[in-house]
Image 1 (cartoon, rainbow, N blue to C red):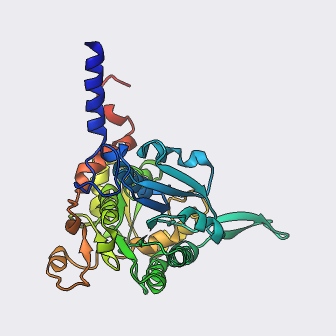
Image 2 (image 1 turned 135 degrees about the vertical axis):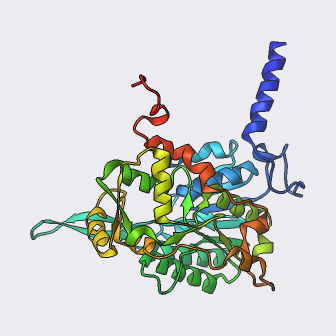
Image 3 (image 1 turned 120 degrees about the vertical axis):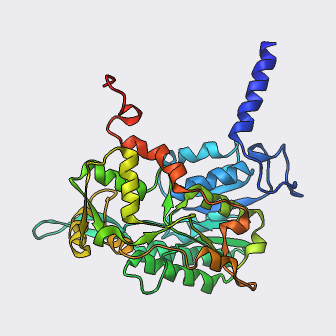
Length: 385
């Protein structure tokens, strides 16, 4: 009897921890009971899997029984958190260097789909010794152009050369040729480079991502916790429309379910509401119980002065490029109504076209922002500390 109860409990745990595959009908090449424990007959090569969005894409793909070739530039222990997303034997981790085309070719292998999520919010640098004072200098390791243009173009060229059926490239809603942010400009250049080489690539353009590991909401909460003031660039009146990272991951997974249908398409991902940075800061201070934090309206040029110093920290909290990026509206190309009113085969798709419902930031943010409270969950409990 005890063994029977354990079996029932195990089945319940499995049901809770796995989602129904996105395609309800069994593929002709699929084997197994379905879900994470099945073989979907689909192989996906993933660049940028260790990033913020990448871990959620891996989780969604693993739920569908996909075989993943995961590109890795570091030690194997840096990617071990991705292994539980897939069933045993459904991953292949391959070391590569973006400057070694043969290693990138090895990552792709015989994949059916290639996904590129490589990105960096700052240019990685490394120190080197000089002969003159101060006897140390910094040189760029990977620039924005490298990460957002050169590498995507190389991957697209390899997909063309190796006759890969589908290529999904993750860009940004902020991508623009005349944006003050170099990151946004190179994102646009990367889109054009991919389209030039691989015209039927699927382009996904999310707005700012939020989620437990984000560098957006967590950054604002971190600034309020550790710095004497929280700067709002030019008053924080710029608009942004953040999207939940899990929603974007679900959209990418559903593209993989029927990639041929979305060849050459552009998919814009954005949240249900827009906010000013000042409104988001007020919301964060309310959640973290840091109403006493000093939020100041600081002109952009003064914030840039501080960013020029902070950019040399490891994982810098603020860089000049972030200041330029946040000094402009970060919104999708059209309003929700304009997206719906589009006609023709070249219309821009949204998450709604994939059946993915937009998650409000209010439903998710508390789950990971409360850790910035001085007392965690128990701040309001008298006599606990």
